Length: 145
View 1 (cartoon, rainbow, N blue to C red):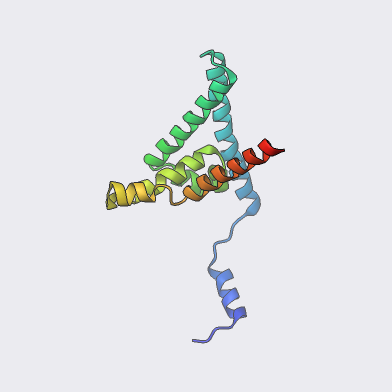
View 2: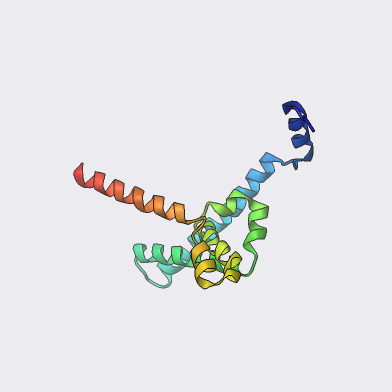
């Protein structure tokens, strides 16, 4: 079967799902915004009622959001949120927790070492490595400048 580029392109357009860019951006904005509002509420609660310092409140906010992202991934809800919101669920820190927990859950049947532990950082690993290297480079440049 010999298919030229134009036939292939028309076939791809025919079978590809149609998306509404404006509606998709709105859903991403709303869900990402709600995650950020939740983070702000946790921060204000920890800062005000628990009487912690700003730095400690920021740390507890990050810890809480990472835990919630991992928990929601563990019970299987994060996939639904991601399907609905798209990038709005990936950008906040909860998306990072999802990117670590999801492969670990998927490959746990292969065992703890070769499955869960080896595959846990398959998505987040490059991000962690780049972040550490970029931080070290910036620190070295800051030291000498």
